[in-house]
Image (tube, rainbow, N blue to C red; front, side, top):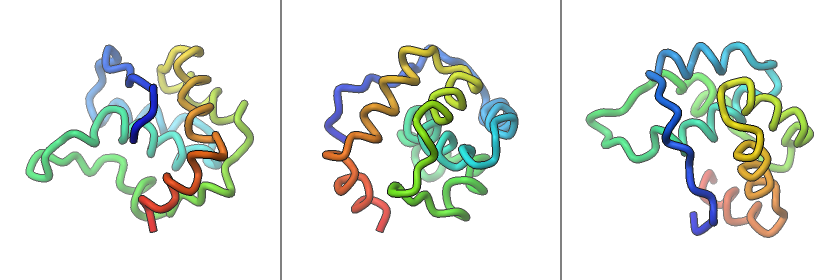
Length: 109
């Protein structure tokens, strides 16, 4: 996406473990957290090796970027699934930056 964010790949979890962790965060942030986890950890998989574990949050409920929950809730959700605080803060600063919203939204239309 052309950001300066470097995904934290040192978190080692199976797709099932990611799903379990995401299911523990409040419902209003689950789709947003699931999307970030998918981009950071699963987006490079080939279609033949695709893991459908996060589909219920990624494909079945569209993420509307203009309706994001407040950033503290998103950061808390990221930390709850295992992102260090600094990485969670940085990840949401990039996503919520108004300059990026049109670019991000156009990828999902």
